[in-house]
Length: 98
Image (tube, rainbow, N blue to C red; front, side, top):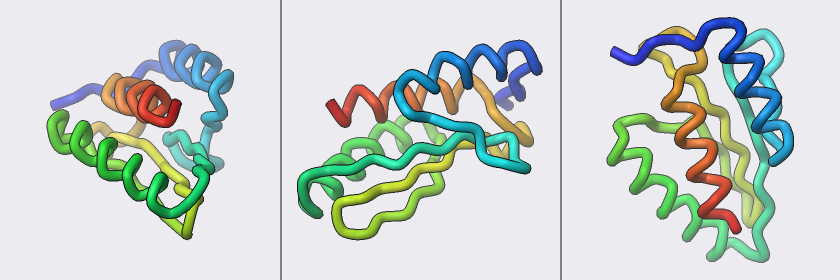
């Protein structure tokens, strides 16, 4: 089972990912980001790529898609909050979006 990040590790992660647009979800141990793409096809293509990595790592995002906008929330339900898996998937999603 994946372990929840310590308070210090969580703060460091949130600080690092803030540079790429990730923010902490109020009242949850989770992070969120909204991605904007040129059109629906690009948004859906990105979601498909991200889904393949999420499945490979057995770590699935909460996400919401409307046309060219995708809002993602990451937390590790098994750990009860943020874990290294959330950091790994957030970085991968950012890399896929470039």
